[in-house]
Figure (cartoon, rainbow, N blue to C red):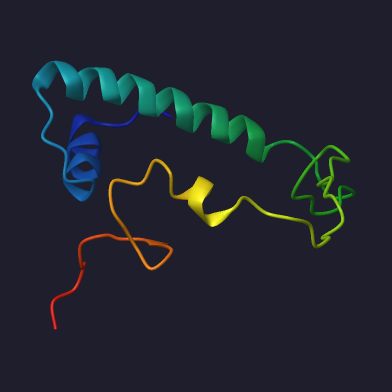
Length: 96
């Protein structure tokens, strides 16, 4: 499916892209190739294939959530540029 330059201009306008004549010609070719490939995929018989979000059986491997000692406060704040009352001190983000 070959797109016209006008169609490519329209898509560029929707995407808020300003393209040169050379870029329009290149995008015309590339977008046409993508649409051709999508057309090929439309022809694939997938009637017996269940909807799938992931094709491999990868699962998250998580450790048990167990209470254990953490880093001491003084050590955690050792490299902080500023601290106050055992916390990192940062500039206010919002003004009241």
